[in-house]
Length: 334
Image 1 (cartoon, one colour):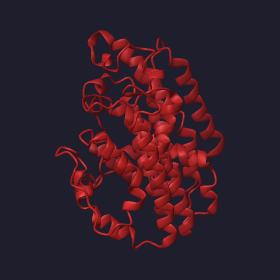
Image 2 (cartoon, rainbow, N blue to C red):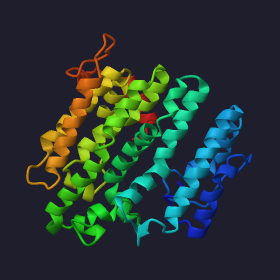
Image 3 (cartoon, helix red, strand yellow):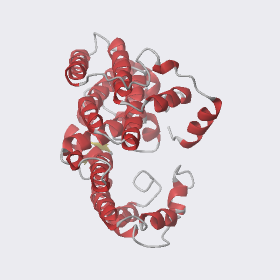
Image 4 (tube, rainbow, N blue to C red):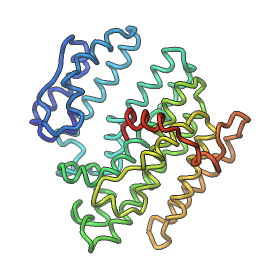
């Protein structure tokens, strides 16, 4: 909301980002300087309510949130001021990973720390930072692929030049008809990069014991794999912002209550990615190998239990009550 708003002066943006860990302790603070079209503007206009609830948390929870906020804000500020960038684009894949770590991987760190501190999960859940980081990176990278057109129109570029520069001279070239083949190959390269986090995601989810925590973590991940399948070899991403259908999203939400179901969902969409993989694409072999590794991990590490709510054949046919559809469409931001 602050980092993404291109109408905010850079100096003001950096000031806010580097001090947000202190702002969250300031009762009554709110912010009215976002542009009128900033879609989450209302959050900062009424941020005093968020602060009020934050200050009601136990001190140990506040410390976790403040620490992650500080690290995240400073990381965002580094990118906003041009560090790790070439002109307006993230430069290397390593820089891309670092950016996604700051804006999403650190959220994974914080959540794991909160799950452990609350006693809802074992303290072991916070020890493997690679898994926590991948939980955030998979979501962030998938959204960055999906949001190509929206970000381009708003003057943002998050795809790393190390990837897209192999296929075009300008980031905007992929919108042109004469770059259709290069655009397809570039997006498949980006999907390959995001898909590499799937094994870590499945390992992390398989370690969760608390039902509420599992649901909270699993739902965004199944949305992400469904979105990744949707954007793979889909030229529409270069012309408009695309999303999975709301009905499909509701079905995924209701099915994401058990690891068996989640594995089935991942298998389904990974299969779809493999089905759409193009043999003439220079990324074809790497994508195929990665899909094989994901299947291999599932076969070796996941043993289905008797608690499965829906089978892989039936979860997409889950009956949806009209009231539930309305509820989730209203409350779930896709």
